[in-house]
Image (cartoon, rainbow, N blue to C red; front, side, top):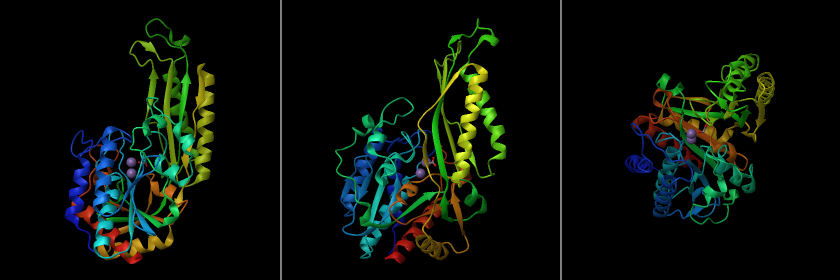
Length: 397
Ligand code: GLV
Ligand code: MN
Ligand code: MN
């Protein structure tokens, strides 16, 4: 099978136009936004043209389904609130191109998917989490985004959905993605074959103090929710030192102060607390540290603390056989310019692994930048990745 790299790049650039924003090739296309829904409608047309009947599931994940048993390829087409043009989109368009090339070559059968809300406007990889059964649709519907909208409201904007696709029709899942980190770019290598995907924990925490006047309230009488957040952040950075490895990461990426004004001592601070590691035991130990530190800071500062729903995914290993096929294909298309590597980013493949063998391949991210408008990858690397994916699928056929 010979994938058409011109057609692939042209489709990738066309998809970028939905929500194009910011500098360079930036994209703003969060799950269920008008741009996301329009991009999915465009994609459904592409699936149709390729002879893959499009199918929206109740979450808004979009499948292009081959007849009978098939391998499933794909990723997601929603983006972060400020995102790049490749995170997710690359895996979907590469899947589409490989499916077309496979059809032209007379096989094997390839289906394509773009999962909904991988970027976690509402949760963590929400569309594939519901599809895989790790999260019920009922529980998902109650999740809220950072502005308080529910997922139930958001998904009502999608085209009328039919049933969930039966995962047993797929023999395996391969997701191509950008690395989103610095390692391949730094080494000048073209491809990464993923060994495992880290686990994640994510929850909202709120400190509630007392809203008051910023000019007249003496420092010793304040119950300042932001000061509590500051002390909490310093405390976990210190206490994690005995718990983490150099690969462990944690992030407070979203903070909402109330009422969020220059001259008011903040009455409440709600923030996201996220942490990731390859070891579930360490993730659990970090949770203890977080809860203890927040509780202690709250006591010392005279504020209340509350913890939101804990979301998470366990670390997963890639399937040995699919991985082996990707490694062989990488050796053919990028001899001595590829490596085996873990994924520090989350992917739909984690959820899909509950039902079938999964594997992933990475191409380099220039300067290791992603989840930012500047995200990019050279055309040569995009095409090499496409060839590795096509080669692996051809071997499986
Ligand atoms: C997914 O984009 C992640 O946050 O790793
Ligand atoms: Mn992604
Ligand atoms: Mn992402």
